Image (spheres, one colour):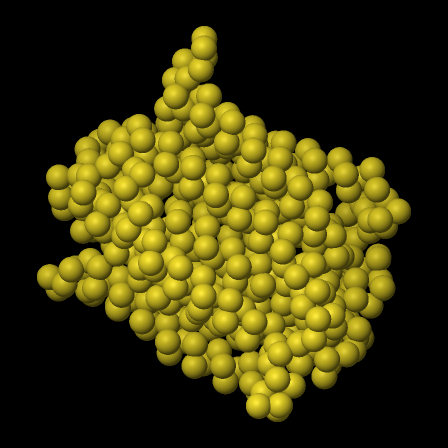
Length: 465
């Protein structure tokens, strides 16, 4: 028992350090997802078609957001290690790399999403039940997309700044900006979706306008504070004086970061493809998955925040050359994340049937949503371990391995299974969803082996790495 405590349980100082990083991220993501839930409920109160149209577009926007996240994270691996080493110029150069690559991705994705909105939205529209009008769902989706594209610019800038701040130990400001944004979103949602006084009810368009304005509020706070506090953020000094980045650093970020960017892109596309496979069983499934995903995201903030904390803390330890401490810290953080999610998943499982009752939709959609939520809750500890293993490998720059571990696995195993079960069997969609989650157990075993072998223990700030 003593050996167990030494390996997996930290002291009070350990948990204080971890929670100081993780809790602000949890609060920010928790409030964001809670408001997303309320936003989803408000749109869902208008009707199933409106909710489904918004859900389809948000699935496409998710691909963009994950691509930007991958771009920021690729350079962020180096940013965290440079900060751990005390190299502010390195942090500045890593941030410049983020700005340039995010600008390119933003232009490409806005073009793709706008020019190909018709075929992209129709990918998710299939007959299969009496729940919803496909043509109305398409119209609402197009209306929402046309407005929400404006918000991609401030969302990208926020990710660049907030990611760099977190890598340098500043987690409170991004949280505060996120809180301000979601409160703005919540108030404007109510006013613009349902109308207030002389303001007409705008429905789906109101939800999109509220989200865009909230994105600008968040972006403004993060950017303004970062530039107003150069003493706390020395990396920001002279950030726009030049966009010259050392060739060796650019080369290393591309070599280490391209697999990460490709991974995030393919993973998010894979999630969209899985949803598309499920959507062949009808619009009710799309609506049920939308409710389930929105609710699950509210509970998933714990392992997502702890995964981010792993990438920051372990990355800083590796950059400082404290390799053994990094291994010990990582093991204890993974254990902590899994145990936390075991309890949270249990609570989520018990209250799963309550959430769908809030929505103005059919009994079929409510039953599907409750089933999806319970399956997600049963696998939450598994998700926690996979997320922690992914960030562990990434913190040491093993981005090609994370590429194989994450997105390649989705495309080689998850998607073919979902495709085959939805198109060539009469299996109920709930059992199909369960089977597609169960296959992640194999991935969990692979992640355990990779982490245990310590292939990720690597200081990338040293010359020649």
